Structure formats: structure tokens, C-alpha cells
Length: 292
Image (cartoon, rainbow, N blue to C red; front, side):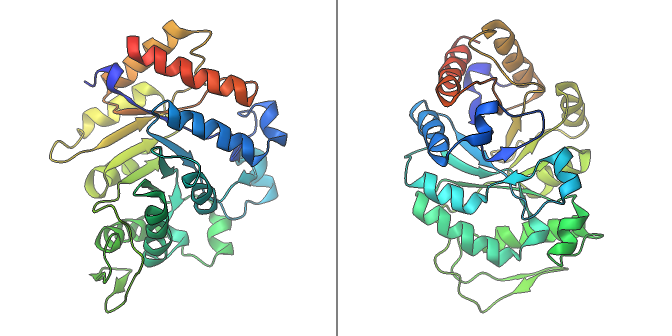
């Protein structure tokens, strides 16, 4: 069990993704300057990471459920890297099937260089068949391809001349320059199934599930324990937005439940009414964690 006071704090960055019924009114017309304000505050307060999701294009009818706004993480993080000093940048998630592993290694390796080694690659299998079709990416065997892509990424990240031979990807004799400056770029697996948890344990450095109840997550971790042979992150997301300003006791209890379930950190979502209120919630969560 993690001490709740030692949980890493991350934020599901506002504005960048607009999910129906899950965003604040101010986000609808927010400028990117508001994102910078929030992330700079998180950086100042010692937050571990901020997130950004990936979708290239979402069918109009699907957007009614999943939302239609998805900022591109590479562009977002490149800008934020110039505005911050320590906070890490976690894709949550990058859909592996949309990219060749060397494309990811080059683009996010470059981001790792310009950010001073602050990239976390949160990756996922993907589930939006229409988007796979649009991008001419195979859908039926995307799970096996994602596994192979993760192995290929581990062989390619931080290497000038990467070499790999797998079931779906193979490369060698090619230069990738620049490449990641971190010797071991963390790979966090996103998802909401036991298979995503197994994939994280077998191939990754962490798990960042979404859309699951704490009890469900605890059950998965009981079936397959957290690895102890290497550093491994378990980043849990609250079932409903946190309000540490108004409900510090409830938030402290939530942090305790996360820690008891095996979490090492939190992907926090907040109740918020403006950028300034969001920053106040950031400050309040740090205070609650200190006394949890």
C-alpha cells in the first residue's frame, strides 16, 4: 500500500478534450493561454504530469458520446515544454495502431529532447473502427499489433540506430536522430479491461485506466499483482471530479482508497468554474494530500 501522502499528482488537462457532460462551461470558449495558466500552476505546485489525448477525426455521431475536440498532443506538449520546467507530458493515450513505431520514436523522441527528458508515452490499442478505416490502419488484429509496437518502441526509443524484428514491425540500418534523451522513456498503458492491465504488466512501465470503479481496479490488481522487479506506476482516475476546496475530507478518503488499491498516483479531474478556480483546486489538492 502506498502512503497517500506520496501519491504522484497528475491532471487530465482541461480544454484539450471536450467530453459531453464532463466539461465546465468556461472550457467551451477557452483560449490556449488558459491551458498554459493551468499547467504552469501545476508545474509550480509540483504536479508530476499533465495529459493530452489523441484522436485524428471523430465521426459526427460518435462525437455526441466521445466528444469531438481533441488537441494534438505533440503540438500541445511542444508549446507547454517551453512554458514549464519540471512537469512531465503524458499522452493519455496515443493510439499505437495509427503510427509506425519509428514515427513515434522520432516525433516523441524529439519532444523528449526539447522538453529536457519529460515525456511519458501513454499508449493504447484504440477502439474507434471508423478512425482506423480513415487512416487505413488494420483494426481486427490491433491488439497483437499494439503488443508488437510496444516491443518495437522499447527497442527504438533513445537509440540512434534502432533494430527490431517482430511479427508486424521490423527495422534496422536506419538512423533516428534526434532520439529520446531519457534512457528509459516510461510506457504507460491506458484502457479499461483486464487485458490492458496484463499488457501493462507484461510490456509497460505503468497503467493508467479510465472509466473503471476503484473496486474493479482493485480486483484486477488482485488477479495479477503489480510488478515488483522494476519501477511501475499505477495512475488511477476518480470516478467523479474532485472538489478538494469544498470536500477535503471526501477527497482525502478517495486518495486513501486509491493508495489502498495499489495506486502510485492520480490522474485528477476537478470541479471547476474558471481557470482561476481550477488553479485553486490544484492548490487545495496538494494541501489535502499532505494531510491524507
